[in-house]
Length: 152
Image (tube, rainbow, N blue to C red; front, side, top):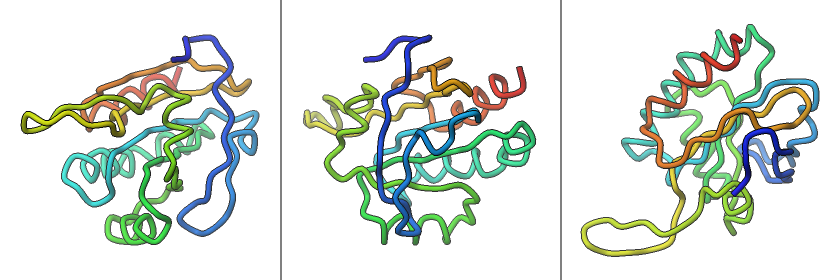
């Protein structure tokens, strides 16, 4: 896991538009990164829609929002279109980026233990340093925390 004040792990992933996106593309901007388990599920939709609704405030402060999941790009396209999401979604099928951020690990559901995405969010400052890290977050908390931190 990375600590507040450390350089955020770089990445290079394919977006819902088929473009390759790197964290370094956003140097000089604040970046909200959130990891979600699966597109078009109830919690993930609530999280994405809360960020969509907060997006004008985030954009007013030159902040970028990036959602990352193990979903393939075609599922991300559908998710983005279904919910009119104005920010990019990235595919992390081998969960390497999620692991680097501590957003991949053991989960339990219905008495079964398995490995998967741990709903998490991060805020990276203009210099690429981590200023917020939240693991096992509630879906609606990501947008609230992002707006608070970006407006500072």
